[in-house]
Image (tube, rainbow, N blue to C red; front, side, top):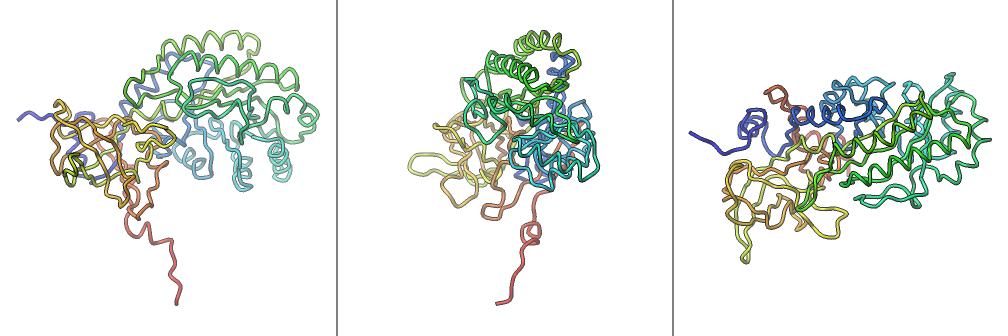
Length: 423
């Protein structure tokens, strides 16, 4: 009997759903490996590739990319511990964020990271004081720069204008005396991150060129000996109709042409390219099961067992116009669409819509529906506690075997931290 359903490394999606239940996220390590290895093979050897855990903090996703050679960019105590438990060495880890707590900074000083990324001169002074108090010497830090240039093409700009991130270039140009007064910290270089979801390689090459130019000029003006520059990431993933794939060969060639002359001037400097969405989005599929198929005032609806509480990105937050992520029938993956359905979740809110008027083959109750390119900003960027449904299971398929890498929430997970007082 032939089947048209979706398979992951030879496993039918129905078998995965039957074993682990729905809704769930499924991660394919073959896709993770291909994505990383293609990029690694095209990237200049002086550029280290780091996973930004905010995109997907699952410890197995982190551990698998770490086993391939990726470092880690983290922004919380839990992400720091995730990277450690996943096997990524402290010297391959950086910690950033505009409002780090004292506990986070103390943990960073103690951990021996590759660099603590300081986002203000005040934070730099605080780290220096902690290093003195802890008896540590030569604690490496990078300074996050808010450049005075802007790049078009970002889905979410994070630099080049007034921001909570980083230190303005103009302020750093006058900070030589402050930097020379540091006692136990050593500024190793600079970090800049201009935005996310760039889909034109020309924009990313422009970013890289300008960031390296800023780092070089700031090093000259402040007396910093450059040994590390993080030129950010922001490599985009196309989700919506008419969006192009990022041209990775052209991008890699453009970045290499920019990096090579920089390294001739700074031969002892290493570079970091931090990526989250680009590394992980393609490996993930959000799988939900159709509970009911109904019609309302001429529009057909699929009411599924999982929705925007698990996949807030699919709502189109931050977009002026709601556009659908790629949504497919996993039960009839190779069949042509026969009509349009609005796919919703189980929540008691009209905003629980995963996709509007999605072209699908005939959908029947019990069918599996998949939101593709969902390996980034899935559960971690979703209101999983809304209506107390909890977070879904996460499953990783590796070498043809499906592994549970996060169990779904149960009642005790949601209520166990609450305390009923006596009235």
